[in-house]
Amino acid sequence: MKPVLILFLAAQVATSTANAHTGVQDDEVLARMDGMSAIAKEMKIIGKMLKGTAQFDPKAVDAALSAIGDEAERIPALFTPRATDPKSEAKPIIWESFEDFSDKANALGAVTDELKGQILYAPDLAPLMQEIGQTCRACHTQYRVSD
Ligand code: HEC
Image (tube, rainbow, N blue to C red; front, side, top):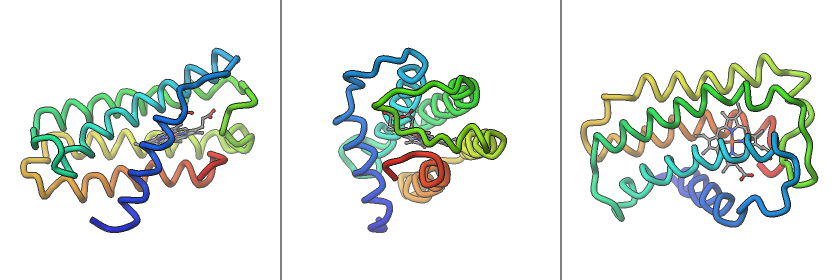
C-alpha cells in the first residue's frame, strides 16, 4: 500500500473517531457532518478488508459502494443551506463555487457506480480505495479546513 493511501485512511479514521459531533449546535451542519461520517464508516468496512482485518467479501464491498454513492448524491442538498457552526470545517468558498463543489460530489458518485460489481478479488481493493480516496481529497483540499 502506498504511504499516501495509509496516511489518508489513518486521517479519515482519526477524524471520525475523534469527532463525535459534540458541541455542534446547528442542525444543518450536523446533518452534513453525519452524512460525511456515514461515508467514512462505509470506507472503513472496505479498509478493513484491504488491511486484512476483515475477510474479503465482494457483496459487502458492493453494499458499501452503494451506500457511499447514495450519500454522495445527498451532498449537494445537504450543503445547499449556507449553515455555519464554530465546529464546522466547511470553507465559505463552497458557496461561491457551488457548481464545482457539486461536481466533486458527483465525481464520487460516478466512481462508486463505476466500481460496483467490478471488485471480484482482494487485490482489487487497493486501486479501489485509491480511486475513491482521490475524489474525497479532491473536494477536501479545496473545501474543507483541516485537509
Ligand atoms: C463534494 C465535497 C466532498 C466530498 C466528495 C467528500 N467530502 Fe468529506 N467533507 C466535505 C466537507 C466540506 C466537510 C466539512 C463539513 C463541515 O464540517 O461542515 C467534510 C467532512 C468530512 C468528515 C468529517 C465529518 C465530521 O464528523 O465532522 C469526514 C470523516 C469526511 N468528510 C470523509 C469523507 C470521505 C471518506 C470521502 C470520500 C469517500 C469524502 N468525505 C468526500 C466535503 C466533501
